[in-house]
Image (cartoon, rainbow over all chains, first blue to last red; front, side, top):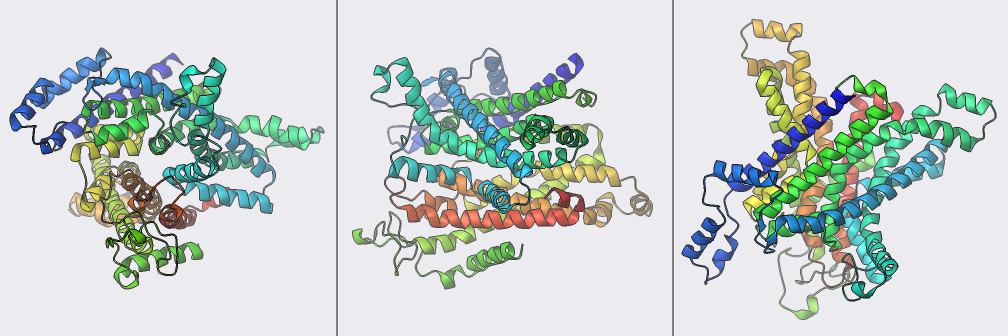
Length: 324
Length: 268
């Protein structure tokens, strides 16, 4: 097990290092620079531009910049965000927990709903309601995240006033609220963006889980349970469902990149101030250090997530440990 | 399947015949306040956007851009994937290891982030630029598939025989390995369309993809004015076009997959 952990950890680190290098190369090799946009400004002369480039070290040879960037990363220093005039590390400290909250809530809600739906579909296989729900899940998976988010924004938020339209908290009242009031405030803001991502997660999970359950139901131990007089619920939930949960860990690991990609759109549309929205703004503002930090955070999250999924699967099922 | 194919054919016809079908110029912006944000009516079945442009005409012309970008980008991704996969599979050794690590790295970053990095470095894109970016981020899956197949087939007798007669290696690949991969590439390509169409729409919606005034299904949506839901027609109709296309493409892709891999049928 220790060898498996080490091998998986080393692989994850190698992938992250490669992503960092690829992203750095792409951003810096391409034409344009972080201060090019302000060249349209007549007060910004070529001399001033050169001075800015020099001040932030963008005029140095690329390998030198790369090594400096890596060295700074190793010390937890992500650089300076030009568009926000703040340390990138400080921006990340603010945005990363918010994205965690959003994705965490979406994952928990989406996986639970997907499991419930998939189990129900397997137990009621072939009935009209089951078929309709399967078609619906496929249809939901064909709707891009930003359209679901726009629909959620247009109807429950803007038209029916059930939930706030944007942000993570009430800008005027939040600071004067009690602790419970603040938690409630954030929850109200969380429902629609997390619900959007949860809907898509649930549709994805239910499709996998339905087939996992269908594979379990004809198994002999389920038949034995039934033969011993267990009710339908006990046979399906206690016996079949438990054994169908194994692949779920892997599926969640596979869903992470999609979920993070979805968060980019959902955060932008609901003005949720997380990493996704930060990335989009950083791209608009030519803020190289912030863009790079965003990609790093995204890939670290996904790589660690899938490494964790592998380790958990190996813990749950010893047969999987041999392969590594 | 037949219905899905019919939907797709309809959209392709609309895209090709756009100038003949569209009732208005998709870029025309009448300088009259009374033409702004009109709800659907006889004159404008899909209404007008905040610049007084006819949404129906924009959706029709948008089909050209959105479908065109997606199809060419997927073909580019398949070609790159086949080429890189073939090189990695044949060369083996370090070339193979490096290629496959790059594939791992690219697959572990959400594709949207990869695209954002590329857009950050290139600035506002032309339609050709978007195709290149979508193509350059779409090849890893295909290259894995092709590499696996090449490694499997390169020692087979008929491949060895062809090589023994002095056929150059790339010709062996094109004549004897690639044809066997065509069904799988077809499925991969079809399903790739279903991810590329929403990606382009999403990027264009964020203002980072197809630049206005050229219409794509994604950037039409970002021209909805006021509070979300006020001008619902500017969001709904291009949105429906995206969803219908993706659903049709997905259905066809899944059916094709079942057809080439009969084992999958029992799962459905």
